[in-house]
Length: 229
Ligand code: NI
Ligand code: MN
Image (cartoon, rainbow, N blue to C red; front, top):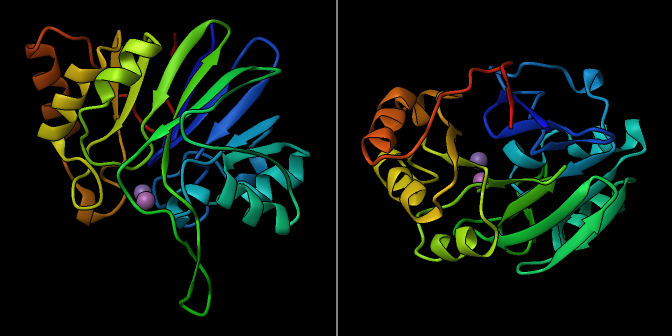
């Protein structure tokens, strides 16, 4: 039974029986972060795309823990050049790691990596990720708009949990994320990527109510709260 702890924004700590990983570890600079990068003890870091609020402290956490950073080829190569162990993958590909299986999916978004001088390093295509840990499968959508192929993601890997962005502006808003939940058919749907900044202030309770009205289970997980799946 893996434990999923919401660290704020799109950052999740996933602890299995023997290994732990962190997804999109945006902690420094995240006004709502539940933990500091130095508090994180993990074996793997998963990054969905190159934006700063997703790569976040990933390189630092991977280096500090001797953890392997898993991302698309372009983001993994960039992070590898900054001194951490990496495992590069790409969309549609799955791989078995010591903790379980990772499959990258499409996401409709950007993935450029901002440099200090205002230029971008090419970050390839953004991804979502299907993670199976201790036999339980979680879909972390990364940042994305709504897409019909979400039906395929749920069909190929029946989902225990779907973690969906609802903050609008950069990603799906509430109503598109409700439609996404309908396509994915996860046993439980949980909102993320809202409320971190005023621009993405949407109402997670509205989201949960609407998903439930469609006959599906959904709940808000507060920052710092854990979920056993
Ligand atoms: Ni993004
Ligand atoms: Mn984002």
